[in-house]
Image (tube, rainbow, N blue to C red; front, side, top):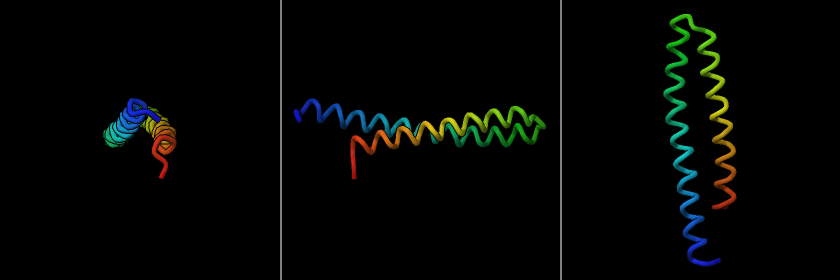
Length: 73
């Protein structure tokens, strides 16, 4: 494997790690707003935000598996 390919694999792993962390930060914010929506009696809004959170969690699972394929332990 050439140096450029190794560099690209390293860069890709860093990018994927960043995406996972970025998504987790958003999920924490979504969780707060879902709670707020519930307190405001906006139950359907809360449900939709929670649904978005589930999708992001699934996305992170896929990204985590992709990361393991690049950097197996």
